[in-house]
Length: 111
Length: 484
Image 1 (cartoon, rainbow over the protein chains, first blue to last red):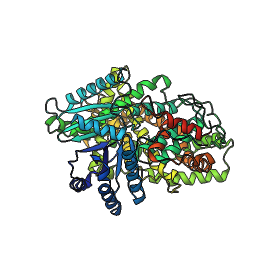
Image 2 (image 1 turned 90 degrees about the vertical axis):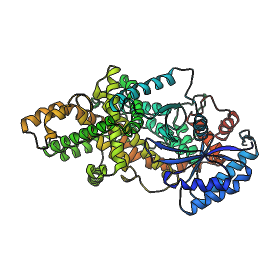
Image 3 (image 1 turned 60 degrees about the horizontal axis):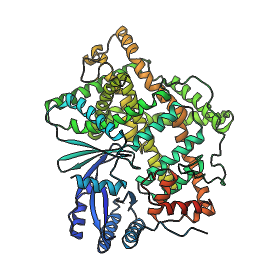
Image 4 (image 1 turned 180 degrees about the vertical axis):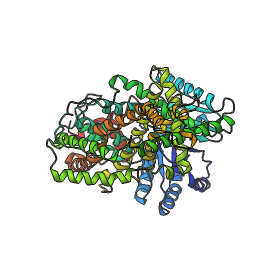
Protein backbone atom coordinates (compact mmCIF):
# COMPACT_ATOMS: atom_id res chain seq x y z
CA UNK A 1 0.00 0.00 0.00
CA UNK A 2 1.51 3.36 -1.08
CA UNK A 3 -0.36 5.73 1.16
CA UNK A 4 -2.93 5.59 3.93
CA UNK A 5 -5.83 8.00 4.16
CA UNK A 6 -5.82 9.01 7.81
CA UNK A 7 -7.93 11.38 9.89
CA UNK A 8 -6.18 13.31 12.67
CA UNK A 9 -8.37 14.82 15.39
CA UNK A 10 -7.44 17.65 17.77
CA UNK A 11 -9.49 20.13 19.85
CA UNK A 12 -10.93 22.86 17.60
CA UNK A 13 -9.05 25.59 19.50
CA UNK A 14 -5.74 24.01 18.45
CA UNK A 15 -6.56 24.07 14.75
CA UNK A 16 -3.51 26.25 13.86
CA UNK A 17 -1.43 23.12 14.59
CA UNK A 18 -2.82 21.65 11.37
CA UNK A 19 -1.35 24.57 9.41
CA UNK A 20 2.09 23.63 10.76
CA UNK A 21 1.56 19.98 9.84
CA UNK A 22 0.34 21.01 6.39
CA UNK A 23 3.53 23.04 5.79
CA UNK A 24 5.80 20.31 7.08
CA UNK A 25 4.15 17.62 4.97
CA UNK A 26 3.78 19.88 1.91
CA UNK A 27 0.13 18.83 1.67
CA UNK A 28 -3.19 20.65 1.66
CA UNK A 29 -5.16 19.17 4.58
CA UNK A 30 -8.94 19.19 4.07
CA UNK A 31 -10.28 20.01 7.53
CA UNK A 32 -13.70 19.39 9.04
CA UNK A 33 -15.06 20.72 12.29
CA UNK A 34 -17.18 18.18 14.07
CA UNK A 35 -19.33 18.26 17.15
CA UNK A 36 -20.87 15.10 18.52
CA UNK A 37 -24.12 15.39 20.44
CA UNK A 38 -22.39 14.82 23.75
CA UNK A 39 -18.98 16.25 23.17
CA UNK A 40 -16.76 19.22 22.52
CA UNK A 41 -16.04 20.77 19.14
CA UNK A 42 -13.06 19.11 17.44
CA UNK A 43 -11.11 19.73 14.25
CA UNK A 44 -10.29 16.77 12.03
CA UNK A 45 -7.93 16.80 9.07
CA UNK A 46 -7.63 14.22 6.31
CA UNK A 47 -3.95 13.41 5.78
CA UNK A 48 -2.30 11.14 3.22
CA UNK A 49 0.51 9.23 4.89
CA UNK A 50 3.25 7.40 2.99
CA UNK A 51 6.53 6.01 4.32
CA UNK A 52 8.44 9.30 3.73
CA UNK A 53 5.87 11.23 5.81
CA UNK A 54 6.15 9.01 8.90
CA UNK A 55 9.13 10.82 10.43
CA UNK A 56 7.45 14.22 9.99
CA UNK A 57 4.22 12.94 11.48
CA UNK A 58 6.06 11.39 14.43
CA UNK A 59 7.87 14.66 15.18
CA UNK A 60 4.59 16.59 14.98
CA UNK A 61 2.80 14.13 17.29
CA UNK A 62 5.70 14.16 19.77
CA UNK A 63 5.67 17.96 19.85
CA UNK A 64 2.01 17.78 20.80
CA UNK A 65 2.62 15.22 23.56
CA UNK A 66 5.41 17.44 24.92
CA UNK A 67 2.85 20.26 25.15
CA UNK A 68 0.41 17.81 26.82
CA UNK A 69 -2.04 18.12 23.92
CA UNK A 70 -4.21 15.16 23.01
CA UNK A 71 -4.41 13.80 19.47
CA UNK A 72 -6.42 10.95 17.99
CA UNK A 73 -5.70 9.27 14.66
CA UNK A 74 -8.09 7.06 12.71
CA UNK A 75 -7.73 4.95 9.61
CA UNK A 76 -10.09 2.28 8.28
CA UNK A 77 -12.15 2.60 11.49
CA UNK A 78 -9.14 1.94 13.74
CA UNK A 79 -8.62 4.67 16.34
CA UNK A 80 -5.53 5.30 18.41
CA UNK A 81 -4.77 8.00 20.94
CA UNK A 82 -1.44 9.81 20.94
CA UNK A 83 -1.10 11.37 24.36
CA UNK A 84 2.21 9.83 25.43
CA UNK A 85 5.44 9.20 23.53
CA UNK A 86 4.78 5.47 23.80
CA UNK A 87 1.35 5.87 22.21
CA UNK A 88 2.88 7.96 19.41
CA UNK A 89 5.34 5.18 18.65
CA UNK A 90 2.47 2.69 18.59
CA UNK A 91 0.68 4.85 16.02
CA UNK A 92 3.75 5.22 13.83
CA UNK A 93 4.56 1.52 13.93
CA UNK A 94 0.94 0.63 13.11
CA UNK A 95 1.13 2.93 10.06
CA UNK A 96 4.51 1.53 9.13
CA UNK A 97 3.14 -2.03 9.33
CA UNK A 98 0.13 -1.13 7.22
CA UNK A 99 2.32 0.55 4.60
CA UNK A 100 4.97 -2.14 4.34
CA UNK A 101 2.94 -5.32 4.31
CA UNK A 102 -0.42 -6.80 3.58
CA UNK A 103 -2.86 -7.03 6.51
CA UNK A 104 -1.40 -9.60 8.89
CA UNK A 105 -4.62 -11.44 9.67
CA UNK A 106 -3.42 -14.76 8.32
CA UNK A 107 -1.21 -15.60 11.26
CA UNK A 108 -0.25 -19.06 12.28
CA UNK A 109 -2.57 -20.48 14.83
CA UNK A 110 -1.05 -20.59 18.32
CA UNK A 111 0.08 -23.91 19.66
CA UNK B 1 -17.51 17.99 -0.37
CA UNK B 2 -19.09 14.55 -0.88
CA UNK B 3 -15.66 13.03 -1.47
CA UNK B 4 -14.20 14.59 1.69
CA UNK B 5 -17.08 13.37 3.85
CA UNK B 6 -16.70 9.89 2.42
CA UNK B 7 -12.94 9.85 3.14
CA UNK B 8 -13.61 11.13 6.64
CA UNK B 9 -16.19 8.41 7.37
CA UNK B 10 -14.05 5.62 5.90
CA UNK B 11 -11.12 6.63 8.10
CA UNK B 12 -13.03 7.26 11.34
CA UNK B 13 -15.69 4.54 11.09
CA UNK B 14 -14.40 2.08 8.51
CA UNK B 15 -17.56 2.56 6.47
CA UNK B 16 -19.60 5.34 4.92
CA UNK B 17 -22.69 3.23 4.34
CA UNK B 18 -25.93 2.56 6.22
CA UNK B 19 -26.62 -0.85 7.77
CA UNK B 20 -28.00 -2.42 4.66
CA UNK B 21 -28.87 -0.07 1.80
CA UNK B 22 -31.31 -2.68 0.46
CA UNK B 23 -33.46 -2.40 3.59
CA UNK B 24 -35.93 0.46 3.87
CA UNK B 25 -34.37 1.62 7.16
CA UNK B 26 -32.07 4.23 5.62
CA UNK B 27 -35.00 5.67 3.68
CA UNK B 28 -37.07 5.79 6.87
CA UNK B 29 -34.34 7.78 8.63
CA UNK B 30 -34.16 10.19 5.73
CA UNK B 31 -37.95 10.63 5.77
CA UNK B 32 -37.97 11.10 9.53
CA UNK B 33 -35.19 13.69 9.25
CA UNK B 34 -37.14 15.55 6.58
CA UNK B 35 -40.33 15.49 8.67
CA UNK B 36 -38.45 16.86 11.70
CA UNK B 37 -36.66 19.44 9.58
CA UNK B 38 -39.98 20.52 8.05
CA UNK B 39 -41.62 20.94 11.48
CA UNK B 40 -38.64 22.92 12.72
CA UNK B 41 -38.35 25.05 9.61
CA UNK B 42 -42.00 26.00 9.88
CA UNK B 43 -41.37 27.07 13.44
CA UNK B 44 -38.15 28.90 12.92
CA UNK B 45 -37.36 30.27 9.51
CA UNK B 46 -39.20 29.02 6.47
CA UNK B 47 -36.94 30.54 3.82
CA UNK B 48 -33.56 31.63 5.01
CA UNK B 49 -31.92 28.44 6.14
CA UNK B 50 -28.42 27.45 5.17
CA UNK B 51 -28.42 23.92 3.75
CA UNK B 52 -28.10 20.95 6.09
CA UNK B 53 -28.00 17.36 4.92
CA UNK B 54 -28.27 13.99 6.60
CA UNK B 55 -25.87 11.11 6.07
CA UNK B 56 -26.68 7.70 7.59
CA UNK B 57 -23.93 5.28 8.60
CA UNK B 58 -23.79 2.07 10.58
CA UNK B 59 -20.60 1.52 12.58
CA UNK B 60 -19.43 1.15 16.16
CA UNK B 61 -19.71 4.95 16.55
CA UNK B 62 -23.13 4.99 18.14
CA UNK B 63 -23.59 8.73 17.93
CA UNK B 64 -24.75 11.70 15.93
CA UNK B 65 -22.38 14.45 14.98
CA UNK B 66 -22.55 17.56 12.85
CA UNK B 67 -19.74 18.13 10.39
CA UNK B 68 -18.98 21.67 9.29
CA UNK B 69 -17.06 22.07 6.09
CA UNK B 70 -16.91 25.55 4.60
CA UNK B 71 -20.44 26.98 4.69
CA UNK B 72 -22.21 23.62 4.68
CA UNK B 73 -23.27 21.30 7.48
CA UNK B 74 -23.90 17.58 7.40
CA UNK B 75 -25.55 15.67 10.22
CA UNK B 76 -24.00 12.21 10.47
CA UNK B 77 -26.32 9.78 12.19
CA UNK B 78 -25.14 6.31 13.10
CA UNK B 79 -27.91 3.71 13.11
CA UNK B 80 -26.14 1.76 15.82
CA UNK B 81 -27.24 4.41 18.33
CA UNK B 82 -30.85 3.29 17.78
CA UNK B 83 -29.87 -0.26 18.67
CA UNK B 84 -28.17 0.92 21.86
CA UNK B 85 -31.22 2.98 22.86
CA UNK B 86 -33.51 0.04 22.15
CA UNK B 87 -31.44 -2.33 24.28
CA UNK B 88 -31.22 0.14 27.18
CA UNK B 89 -34.97 0.69 27.00
CA UNK B 90 -35.42 -3.07 27.22
CA UNK B 91 -33.25 -3.31 30.34
CA UNK B 92 -35.49 -0.79 32.09
CA UNK B 93 -38.94 -1.95 31.00
CA UNK B 94 -38.30 -5.67 31.40
CA UNK B 95 -36.97 -7.39 34.54
CA UNK B 96 -33.50 -8.63 33.60
CA UNK B 97 -30.85 -10.54 35.53
CA UNK B 98 -27.73 -8.67 36.57
CA UNK B 99 -25.76 -11.24 34.59
CA UNK B 100 -27.50 -10.24 31.35
CA UNK B 101 -27.12 -6.54 32.20
CA UNK B 102 -23.42 -7.03 32.95
CA UNK B 103 -22.97 -8.84 29.64
CA UNK B 104 -24.43 -5.88 27.76
CA UNK B 105 -22.50 -3.28 29.78
CA UNK B 106 -19.24 -5.02 28.85
CA UNK B 107 -20.24 -4.70 25.20
CA UNK B 108 -20.87 -0.97 25.62
CA UNK B 109 -17.48 -0.60 27.36
CA UNK B 110 -15.80 -2.47 24.49
CA UNK B 111 -17.50 -0.20 22.01
CA UNK B 112 -16.63 2.99 23.89
CA UNK B 113 -13.01 1.85 24.22
CA UNK B 114 -12.91 1.30 20.45
CA UNK B 115 -14.22 4.72 19.57
CA UNK B 116 -12.06 6.48 22.15
CA UNK B 117 -8.83 4.90 20.92
CA UNK B 118 -8.16 2.14 23.47
CA UNK B 119 -7.87 -1.05 21.34
CA UNK B 120 -6.37 -3.42 23.94
CA UNK B 121 -8.96 -2.37 26.50
CA UNK B 122 -11.69 -2.82 23.87
CA UNK B 123 -10.49 -6.37 23.25
CA UNK B 124 -10.53 -7.20 26.96
CA UNK B 125 -14.01 -5.77 27.48
CA UNK B 126 -15.11 -7.66 24.36
CA UNK B 127 -13.74 -10.90 25.80
CA UNK B 128 -15.59 -10.22 29.08
CA UNK B 129 -18.76 -9.78 27.06
CA UNK B 130 -18.01 -13.05 25.29
CA UNK B 131 -17.56 -14.92 28.57
CA UNK B 132 -21.10 -14.01 29.61
CA UNK B 133 -22.87 -14.61 26.31
CA UNK B 134 -24.83 -17.79 25.65
CA UNK B 135 -23.53 -17.92 22.06
CA UNK B 136 -22.17 -15.57 19.39
CA UNK B 137 -23.93 -14.95 16.07
CA UNK B 138 -21.58 -17.33 14.23
CA UNK B 139 -22.33 -20.16 16.65
CA UNK B 140 -19.20 -19.86 18.75
CA UNK B 141 -19.59 -21.08 22.33
CA UNK B 142 -17.91 -18.68 24.72
CA UNK B 143 -14.89 -19.20 26.84
CA UNK B 144 -16.71 -21.47 29.23
CA UNK B 145 -13.87 -22.96 31.24
CA UNK B 146 -13.30 -19.81 33.26
CA UNK B 147 -15.18 -19.36 36.49
CA UNK B 148 -18.47 -17.54 36.46
CA UNK B 149 -17.38 -13.91 36.39
CA UNK B 150 -20.42 -12.75 38.32
CA UNK B 151 -19.51 -13.43 41.89
CA UNK B 152 -22.72 -12.18 43.42
CA UNK B 153 -26.10 -13.65 44.23
CA UNK B 154 -28.15 -12.25 41.30
CA UNK B 155 -31.57 -13.10 42.72
CA UNK B 156 -34.54 -12.21 40.52
CA UNK B 157 -36.24 -8.90 41.08
CA UNK B 158 -39.07 -9.24 43.61
CA UNK B 159 -42.60 -9.28 42.19
CA UNK B 160 -44.03 -5.80 42.31
CA UNK B 161 -46.07 -3.41 40.29
CA UNK B 162 -43.85 -1.77 37.65
CA UNK B 163 -43.38 1.92 38.40
CA UNK B 164 -43.07 3.01 34.82
CA UNK B 165 -46.18 2.63 32.70
CA UNK B 166 -44.40 1.81 29.44
CA UNK B 167 -43.76 -1.79 28.60
CA UNK B 168 -41.97 -3.93 26.05
CA UNK B 169 -44.75 -3.19 23.55
CA UNK B 170 -43.87 0.52 23.63
CA UNK B 171 -40.15 -0.06 23.21
CA UNK B 172 -40.09 0.29 19.41
CA UNK B 173 -42.02 3.56 19.50
CA UNK B 174 -39.87 4.96 22.29
CA UNK B 175 -36.61 4.00 20.58
CA UNK B 176 -37.88 5.67 17.40
CA UNK B 177 -38.73 8.86 19.32
CA UNK B 178 -35.35 8.85 21.08
CA UNK B 179 -33.52 8.62 17.77
CA UNK B 180 -35.68 11.47 16.49
CA UNK B 181 -34.69 13.48 19.59
CA UNK B 182 -31.01 13.10 18.72
CA UNK B 183 -31.60 14.16 15.11
CA UNK B 184 -33.77 17.10 16.19
CA UNK B 185 -31.18 18.25 18.73
CA UNK B 186 -28.59 18.45 15.95
CA UNK B 187 -31.05 20.28 13.71
CA UNK B 188 -31.96 22.65 16.53
CA UNK B 189 -28.36 23.88 16.77
CA UNK B 190 -28.45 24.57 13.09
CA UNK B 191 -31.82 26.28 13.01
CA UNK B 192 -31.39 28.44 16.08
CA UNK B 193 -28.23 29.83 14.48
CA UNK B 194 -30.27 31.20 11.55
CA UNK B 195 -30.34 35.00 11.41
CA UNK B 196 -34.07 35.46 11.09
CA UNK B 197 -36.81 37.07 13.08
CA UNK B 198 -38.52 33.68 13.39
CA UNK B 199 -35.35 32.11 14.86
CA UNK B 200 -35.04 34.91 17.38
CA UNK B 201 -38.71 34.51 18.32
CA UNK B 202 -38.24 30.76 18.75
CA UNK B 203 -35.24 31.38 20.99
CA UNK B 204 -37.21 33.87 23.10
CA UNK B 205 -40.16 31.45 23.43
CA UNK B 206 -37.83 28.62 24.45
CA UNK B 207 -36.32 30.80 27.15
CA UNK B 208 -39.85 31.64 28.36
CA UNK B 209 -40.68 27.91 28.58
CA UNK B 210 -37.50 27.45 30.51
CA UNK B 211 -38.36 30.16 32.98
CA UNK B 212 -41.93 28.90 33.39
CA UNK B 213 -40.72 25.38 34.10
CA UNK B 214 -38.15 26.63 36.56
CA UNK B 215 -40.61 28.83 38.39
CA UNK B 216 -43.13 25.99 38.60
CA UNK B 217 -40.50 23.67 40.00
CA UNK B 218 -39.30 26.18 42.59
CA UNK B 219 -42.80 27.10 43.79
CA UNK B 220 -43.88 23.46 44.05
CA UNK B 221 -40.72 22.58 45.88
CA UNK B 222 -41.14 25.46 48.35
CA UNK B 223 -44.72 24.36 48.78
CA UNK B 224 -43.58 20.81 49.61
CA UNK B 225 -45.62 19.36 46.73
CA UNK B 226 -42.58 17.87 45.00
CA UNK B 227 -39.08 16.88 46.03
CA UNK B 228 -39.78 16.31 49.75
CA UNK B 229 -36.25 15.37 50.92
CA UNK B 230 -37.40 13.02 53.70
CA UNK B 231 -39.79 11.05 51.47
CA UNK B 232 -37.14 10.95 48.76
CA UNK B 233 -34.48 9.61 51.13
CA UNK B 234 -36.89 6.94 52.45
CA UNK B 235 -37.72 5.82 48.92
CA UNK B 236 -34.06 5.67 47.92
CA UNK B 237 -33.15 3.66 51.01
CA UNK B 238 -35.91 1.09 50.50
CA UNK B 239 -34.84 0.69 46.85
CA UNK B 240 -31.25 0.16 47.94
CA UNK B 241 -32.29 -2.52 50.46
CA UNK B 242 -34.01 -4.46 47.66
CA UNK B 243 -30.93 -4.10 45.45
CA UNK B 244 -28.71 -5.32 48.28
CA UNK B 245 -30.91 -8.38 48.77
CA UNK B 246 -30.78 -9.18 45.07
CA UNK B 247 -27.01 -8.78 44.98
CA UNK B 248 -26.03 -10.62 48.15
CA UNK B 249 -29.02 -12.82 48.97
CA UNK B 250 -29.50 -11.33 52.44
CA UNK B 251 -30.81 -8.21 54.13
CA UNK B 252 -28.22 -5.51 54.88
CA UNK B 253 -26.91 -5.21 58.44
CA UNK B 254 -27.60 -2.04 60.50
CA UNK B 255 -23.99 -0.96 59.94
CA UNK B 256 -24.40 -1.34 56.15
CA UNK B 257 -27.64 0.62 56.27
CA UNK B 258 -25.99 3.43 58.22
CA UNK B 259 -23.13 3.51 55.71
CA UNK B 260 -25.67 3.81 52.90
CA UNK B 261 -27.52 6.62 54.68
CA UNK B 262 -24.23 8.52 55.05
CA UNK B 263 -23.38 7.86 51.42
CA UNK B 264 -26.76 9.19 50.26
CA UNK B 265 -26.38 12.31 52.38
CA UNK B 266 -23.03 13.07 50.75
CA UNK B 267 -24.42 12.39 47.27
CA UNK B 268 -27.47 14.61 47.49
CA UNK B 269 -25.35 17.75 47.93
CA UNK B 270 -23.18 16.90 44.96
CA UNK B 271 -26.12 16.12 42.73
CA UNK B 272 -28.11 19.23 43.48
CA UNK B 273 -27.73 21.31 40.37
CA UNK B 274 -27.51 25.07 40.49
CA UNK B 275 -29.56 25.75 37.38
CA UNK B 276 -28.93 29.48 37.27
CA UNK B 277 -25.15 29.07 37.48
CA UNK B 278 -25.08 26.41 34.77
CA UNK B 279 -27.25 28.40 32.43
CA UNK B 280 -24.85 31.34 32.73
CA UNK B 281 -22.49 29.30 30.53
CA UNK B 282 -23.61 30.12 26.95
CA UNK B 283 -22.56 26.67 25.65
CA UNK B 284 -24.63 24.87 28.28
CA UNK B 285 -27.59 27.21 27.79
CA UNK B 286 -27.50 26.47 24.05
CA UNK B 287 -27.45 22.71 24.65
CA UNK B 288 -30.44 22.99 27.01
CA UNK B 289 -32.39 25.18 24.59
CA UNK B 290 -31.76 22.65 21.82
CA UNK B 291 -32.90 19.81 24.11
CA UNK B 292 -36.15 21.64 24.80
CA UNK B 293 -36.67 22.54 21.14
CA UNK B 294 -35.97 18.95 20.06
CA UNK B 295 -38.30 17.51 22.73
CA UNK B 296 -41.15 19.69 21.52
CA UNK B 297 -40.70 18.53 17.91
CA UNK B 298 -40.49 14.91 19.10
CA UNK B 299 -43.73 15.55 20.98
CA UNK B 300 -45.34 16.55 17.69
CA UNK B 301 -43.83 13.51 15.98
CA UNK B 302 -45.23 11.31 18.76
CA UNK B 303 -48.75 12.39 17.83
CA UNK B 304 -48.15 11.18 14.28
CA UNK B 305 -47.52 7.63 15.57
CA UNK B 306 -50.53 7.53 17.88
CA UNK B 307 -48.74 8.66 21.05
CA UNK B 308 -49.19 11.83 23.08
CA UNK B 309 -47.07 14.97 22.93
CA UNK B 310 -45.98 14.18 26.50
CA UNK B 311 -44.74 10.73 25.39
CA UNK B 312 -42.35 12.44 23.00
CA UNK B 313 -41.08 14.67 25.81
CA UNK B 314 -40.71 11.65 28.09
CA UNK B 315 -38.81 9.72 25.39
CA UNK B 316 -36.47 12.72 25.09
CA UNK B 317 -35.91 12.67 28.84
CA UNK B 318 -35.05 8.96 28.61
CA UNK B 319 -32.61 9.66 25.74
CA UNK B 320 -30.83 12.19 27.96
CA UNK B 321 -30.62 9.49 30.65
CA UNK B 322 -29.03 7.10 28.15
CA UNK B 323 -26.50 9.69 27.13
CA UNK B 324 -25.57 10.27 30.76
CA UNK B 325 -25.18 6.51 31.29
CA UNK B 326 -23.04 6.16 28.15
CA UNK B 327 -20.89 9.07 29.32
CA UNK B 328 -20.46 7.40 32.75
CA UNK B 329 -19.19 4.25 31.05
CA UNK B 330 -17.02 6.23 28.60
CA UNK B 331 -15.24 7.95 31.49
CA UNK B 332 -15.01 4.80 33.62
CA UNK B 333 -14.05 2.19 30.98
CA UNK B 334 -10.43 3.28 30.38
CA UNK B 335 -9.86 3.95 34.10
CA UNK B 336 -11.20 0.54 35.13
CA UNK B 337 -9.23 -1.20 32.38
CA UNK B 338 -6.00 0.52 33.46
CA UNK B 339 -6.68 -0.24 37.11
CA UNK B 340 -6.96 3.45 37.85
CA UNK B 341 -8.72 3.78 41.20
CA UNK B 342 -10.13 7.20 40.37
CA UNK B 343 -13.92 7.01 40.59
CA UNK B 344 -16.30 8.67 38.18
CA UNK B 345 -17.28 11.89 39.94
CA UNK B 346 -20.18 14.29 39.36
CA UNK B 347 -17.61 16.66 37.81
CA UNK B 348 -16.86 14.09 35.09
CA UNK B 349 -20.54 14.02 34.22
CA UNK B 350 -21.30 17.68 34.86
CA UNK B 351 -22.59 18.43 31.36
CA UNK B 352 -24.83 15.37 30.99
CA UNK B 353 -26.10 15.55 34.54
CA UNK B 354 -26.90 19.23 34.25
CA UNK B 355 -28.77 18.77 30.97
CA UNK B 356 -30.84 15.99 32.48
CA UNK B 357 -31.70 17.94 35.60
CA UNK B 358 -32.42 21.15 33.75
CA UNK B 359 -34.61 19.28 31.28
CA UNK B 360 -36.53 17.69 34.12
CA UNK B 361 -37.20 21.04 35.70
CA UNK B 362 -37.98 22.99 32.58
CA UNK B 363 -39.67 20.57 30.14
CA UNK B 364 -42.86 20.99 32.11
CA UNK B 365 -42.94 24.41 30.43
CA UNK B 366 -43.82 22.60 27.18
CA UNK B 367 -46.94 21.10 28.68
CA UNK B 368 -49.93 22.07 26.61
CA UNK B 369 -49.31 22.53 22.95
CA UNK B 370 -45.60 23.00 22.83
CA UNK B 371 -43.54 26.09 22.86
CA UNK B 372 -44.61 27.65 19.60
CA UNK B 373 -48.23 26.55 19.70
CA UNK B 374 -51.09 28.07 21.59
CA UNK B 375 -50.57 29.31 25.14
CA UNK B 376 -49.29 26.50 27.32
CA UNK B 377 -50.86 25.57 30.63
CA UNK B 378 -48.10 27.39 32.40
CA UNK B 379 -48.57 30.43 30.22
CA UNK B 380 -52.19 30.49 31.24
CA UNK B 381 -51.35 30.00 34.89
CA UNK B 382 -50.20 33.53 35.48
CA UNK B 383 -46.79 32.32 36.61
CA UNK B 384 -45.17 34.54 34.03
CA UNK B 385 -46.79 37.57 35.61
CA UNK B 386 -43.90 37.72 38.06
CA UNK B 387 -45.92 37.13 41.21
CA UNK B 388 -46.82 33.93 42.98
CA UNK B 389 -50.28 32.63 42.00
CA UNK B 390 -52.87 32.24 44.74
CA UNK B 391 -53.01 28.84 46.44
CA UNK B 392 -56.23 27.61 44.76
CA UNK B 393 -54.85 28.37 41.33
CA UNK B 394 -51.56 26.73 42.25
CA UNK B 395 -53.34 23.55 43.29
CA UNK B 396 -55.34 23.44 40.04
CA UNK B 397 -52.20 23.93 38.01
CA UNK B 398 -50.33 21.31 39.97
CA UNK B 399 -53.10 18.78 39.32
CA UNK B 400 -52.68 19.37 35.59
CA UNK B 401 -48.92 19.19 35.65
CA UNK B 402 -48.07 16.61 38.23
CA UNK B 403 -48.90 13.73 35.89
CA UNK B 404 -46.17 14.95 33.60
CA UNK B 405 -43.77 15.42 36.48
CA UNK B 406 -44.64 12.04 37.98
CA UNK B 407 -44.00 10.21 34.71
CA UNK B 408 -40.44 11.43 34.69
CA UNK B 409 -40.10 10.50 38.37
CA UNK B 410 -41.52 7.03 37.68
CA UNK B 411 -39.02 6.48 34.91
CA UNK B 412 -36.23 7.74 37.18
CA UNK B 413 -37.11 5.30 39.93
CA UNK B 414 -37.43 2.33 37.61
CA UNK B 415 -34.15 3.28 35.93
CA UNK B 416 -32.25 3.48 39.23
CA UNK B 417 -33.95 0.27 40.47
CA UNK B 418 -33.09 -1.87 37.51
CA UNK B 419 -29.97 -0.33 36.05
CA UNK B 420 -28.56 2.95 37.37
CA UNK B 421 -27.63 1.96 40.92
CA UNK B 422 -26.24 -1.36 39.76
CA UNK B 423 -23.99 0.34 37.19
CA UNK B 424 -22.67 3.04 39.48
CA UNK B 425 -22.37 1.02 42.70
CA UNK B 426 -21.42 -2.50 41.64
CA UNK B 427 -20.67 -3.01 37.96
CA UNK B 428 -17.64 -0.73 37.76
CA UNK B 429 -16.02 -2.24 40.85
CA UNK B 430 -16.76 -5.81 39.68
CA UNK B 431 -15.45 -5.06 36.17
CA UNK B 432 -12.07 -4.08 37.56
CA UNK B 433 -11.69 -7.40 39.41
CA UNK B 434 -12.94 -9.43 36.45
CA UNK B 435 -10.53 -7.79 34.01
CA UNK B 436 -7.59 -8.61 36.27
CA UNK B 437 -8.79 -12.21 36.40
CA UNK B 438 -9.07 -12.35 32.62
CA UNK B 439 -5.59 -10.92 32.06
CA UNK B 440 -4.05 -13.38 34.53
CA UNK B 441 -5.34 -16.32 32.48
CA UNK B 442 -2.52 -18.07 30.54
CA UNK B 443 -4.49 -18.03 27.30
CA UNK B 444 -4.80 -14.27 27.45
CA UNK B 445 -1.01 -14.00 26.98
CA UNK B 446 -1.32 -15.27 23.41
CA UNK B 447 -3.63 -12.37 22.62
CA UNK B 448 -0.86 -9.77 22.84
CA UNK B 449 -1.78 -8.39 19.42
CA UNK B 450 -1.08 -5.16 17.53
CA UNK B 451 -3.87 -2.56 17.82
CA UNK B 452 -5.57 -3.23 14.47
CA UNK B 453 -5.86 -6.94 15.29
CA UNK B 454 -6.99 -6.32 18.87
CA UNK B 455 -9.79 -4.24 17.38
CA UNK B 456 -10.88 -7.08 15.11
CA UNK B 457 -11.01 -9.45 18.10
CA UNK B 458 -13.04 -6.87 20.08
CA UNK B 459 -15.52 -6.52 17.22
CA UNK B 460 -15.78 -10.25 16.75
CA UNK B 461 -16.36 -10.84 20.47
CA UNK B 462 -19.15 -8.26 20.42
CA UNK B 463 -20.69 -9.38 17.11
CA UNK B 464 -19.88 -6.03 15.55
CA UNK B 465 -18.08 -7.27 12.45
CA UNK B 466 -21.15 -7.63 10.27
CA UNK B 467 -20.78 -8.98 6.76
CA UNK B 468 -17.98 -6.63 5.85
CA UNK B 469 -15.22 -8.42 7.66
CA UNK B 470 -12.67 -10.27 5.58
CA UNK B 471 -10.89 -11.33 8.76
CA UNK B 472 -11.86 -15.00 8.92
CA UNK B 473 -8.28 -16.05 9.60
CA UNK B 474 -7.91 -13.76 12.59
CA UNK B 475 -11.26 -14.89 13.93
CA UNK B 476 -10.04 -18.49 13.69
CA UNK B 477 -6.84 -17.41 15.42
CA UNK B 478 -8.80 -15.94 18.32
CA UNK B 479 -10.89 -19.07 18.66
CA UNK B 480 -7.76 -21.18 18.72
CA UNK B 481 -6.16 -18.87 21.27
CA UNK B 482 -9.21 -19.20 23.47
CA UNK B 483 -9.06 -22.97 23.26
CA UNK B 484 -11.73 -23.93 20.74
